[in-house]
Length: 436
Image 1 (tube, rainbow, N blue to C red):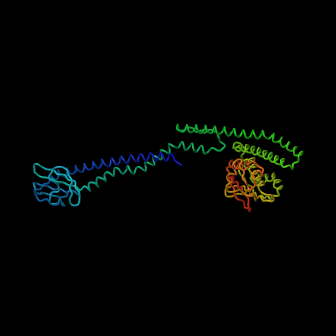
Image 2: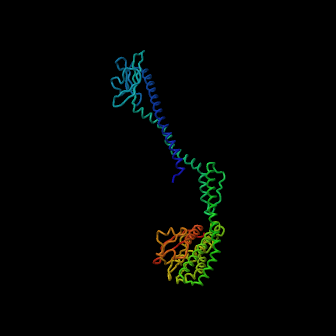
Image 3: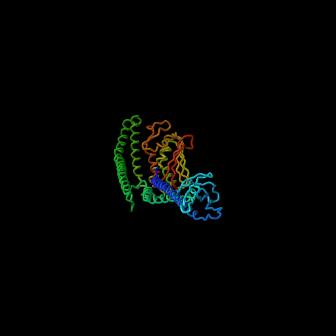
């Protein structure tokens, strides 16, 4: 994911580095030229000094420094020379600066003629030594600029981070908002550049809140409105069964369809009653093990009618939650196990503490759920074709596990679907955070 902070720091630092490089290169060239000019003036000064040497007596072993030689000529006679100087003239008898090669080195030389004494003074200096000395001087001035680039980078990072701090604060505020919190974002003393972002975010939240509210109202109203005609339809269906007989195939199909429609309405009402707003209002400490016991007691006749063996294990387990939402979750998991476990099958329910979680587990010996269906079963109205059984043969509307996932999310719990410990079947494990 692209980072604005890294982009700004890299762009600014690259620009400054390029600018400093160009400036350093230009400064290096200018400084080297100035150093060369300074060394040339030094040669001129040395030539003036050498002109004043008294050569009336014997002159031997004079040295002007490492890498510097001189000669004093009068006509074609060498009057004086520094140690290490060759016997022949080291430069042409022409005034001014020039370059010369001898003794395996390249030399920069200066020749000066004194008309009063009719003497020629020649002073030369090794160019490699001049270059080393000049480069050392120049690098001492350029090196701090290069070494300062990392420090400038840290300074830029700090400034950019400081400038982006309001954006980080806004991001933190948005992360703190719960799923049910659709109130506008309030950010005091926000930067001018963030005002548009905050306004757009609040506008989106408002539209989302309106859409969700319309959806919830429609689902709730539709479910409530359908309850009465469904009840009336069941009465009429009962009367019809007495007239034509309840064993008639068409009657049974009609009765199954009405029961499925009634179940859908009840599930829609359950979904409405487990909204984040209602959950936040009713959340308190709940003993999950006791709640599971109560739900098993209410549904026990369904298991008994199918000769299913139901076992419960566990102990007191305290979590934060809403009674009705948790009852709905447990009821849906138990009903699911009852529905898909064959007659005489086994169902194992447990509530236990594993690490830092309270885990509700419902395992059955039914046909199980294929790997590819384990994620899709939580989609609304999706019904898996379990064990080769057609969905129409099983009562239900495909909302039960959707409601389970929804309630688990409200409780910040995780739902895991696995294979059961029986020869076949599935295991639903809901992992709640342990109450501290």
